[in-house]
Image: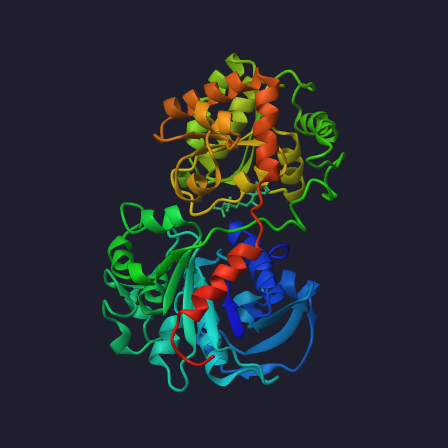
Length: 476
Ligand code: ADP
């Protein structure tokens, strides 16, 4: 089966969040199962510099007023790519969502190129039977398929985060090559604007999101305005959990760690802690439980609840490290907290992949207090690395962490801590639970082992996606 993924991020070249990780892992896992999955992605300079172009270019029209455009077949570590090479839109390095002036044009061009590949195929003769778009940057793909001419490939949209929807002025209808007839509630119109994600969710054959709980939440209060549409399409909406890419996130092979370890050699985890503490300017030693948050600093991530608990953590003898970047107010508040508590609280404001790996190997607890979390990856990495996740019971966090209770401790199923209310007080209570368990070394190690033994691989999700494709009527 020939499938084209359409997305704006690909780890390790261009990654803003979990989407980049998923694009690196899921298509490869589906290829292992025999599906011919390829990825259409803009030819960002970071990608052009790193990957090998493998064949003949497919000429395209000057899409969305962005000048010359073409598709280049390429390959990244065994994953076949089609790069949308349009320098006026994608020639700048850095965050792919910067430069708001031409943001809609850029990703409309990506979506149009996807639909074109589905209809006409590439110069190398490859034509996908199914187009699978990811998040709002691919949202217009089903619209260009629906309103275009020629054969109609099947379409699927996955929502990785419904908070980002790509909503733009209706005056762009013509510049983006959308027919006037598409500007209805049944098409691309969304409250008087053009809704990229909305269009994709309305027009795709199937909709996925990245956990069963999030699939329910976005039909209720958590849909950011798309609840009604999603509830209406309930029969065609499915939640499929993300997995962990064990070639990247495995403490037994992780090149970033000073000491590698696995379930059978847990004591080899210990040297990672003073190394991490030293790097962040925290007091070295094993006595103080080490709490870490690794996150975009975005209101939905709930890091303000951690800020509410800084003094509480320090008063209880714990250490806190925050690795994150984003909201300048939150960045400043964590910097100040670190200044207030030198040696006890550290703030690394920035993005550092290697430091994140070291943090998972050093932490006792990974804090994930998200207000909303479609799937979340950090609580999965925490488990793989023997840190206990402490999460709010929402979205994928609810589906992937078994909270410590007397019952789950007794039956050995506990893998972390959970709390419900999005308040500093509720997080503080869960922190107290973690601190209490920390005093009981044997119980702590049991929970740690249970998490490390959990298998959040990609094979299962990859199979489920292929089964979902099979439910779409048509010859493929
Ligand atoms: P989201 O996609 O909403 O940002 P996820 O938990 O799905 O959240 O994925 C976050 C990914 O980004 C994880 O791989 C995490 O380790 C990484 N990450 C987030 N912030 C940083 C940072 N400041 N430095 C390094 N890695 C980070």
